[in-house]
Length: 358
Image (cartoon, rainbow, N blue to C red; front, top):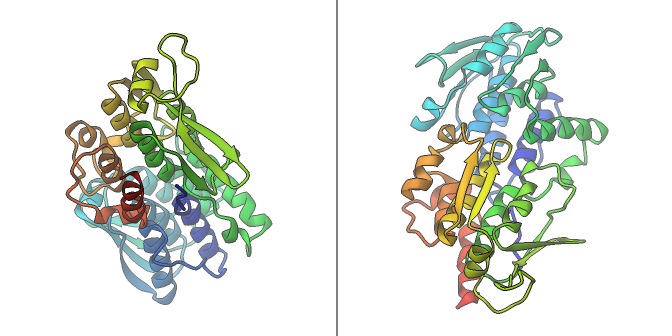
């Protein structure tokens, strides 16, 4: 089956901020794009049209962090940023402190260190060095880089690399870059999960080995869980890896779950640079009877849900990645609307692949 993934919201949201900062036309956004991209696009349009505005970012942490830095450097603009109740418990103090170091005027309207925020835009001293070591979120670093702040960090996250590369490529080609935004490797994780648990062959156009996205490591992770990735000119093709119990050589015929489970009983993985892959990987391991030794999971309780608990208790908690991972693993899900945050067409694709399977 051929599945058209959404574009990378990580890349698209960085591109939108750069376009707004440079006064360029924003990339077109439609209802088929991830909701997070739509939220940021609407917010930037509203800020541009009004000297004083209230922005509701919902549960979009990227918008909250990027807009905090963006609004801080807009002279004569006052912006209030708020979101859902969950957003009011997601820390932002590290970013606010960093921005205040270079002159930002930001006020907490609720609990110290958390949204909502009232931001009075002003001239920032962007030449002053900001040191942001061990950031709670690498998006704090990215938010500062996008506005041109002189930030130094000890983090080597692939998400910071994405930011640096998007800035570089945008400077080279500001008017055409949006035409080549990559498809989303994070969303591909759920189809890797599908092939690992149910077999079949899935083609995902627009994903490539030399992607900017750190979540391309999903191909390496799922190679240990019974999924082969073929890199083709148009994208990738996922298919089961079959192993002989006697010789461990490839063969066909046995159910994929049995193949993967007999091949390896333990998977050790550091999710520090790929936390969004955790739900799909963890639930795949659970279904295949593979023991997952996960490190680098400190940020997971601060995501759209507490993903460590959500995986353990099979809860959606209005978290898009939890909903998709649970559905493919065969669990009941009480909220599918949240999936549009990153992958609006997922339910259509999920129904279609199940129909073909029948």
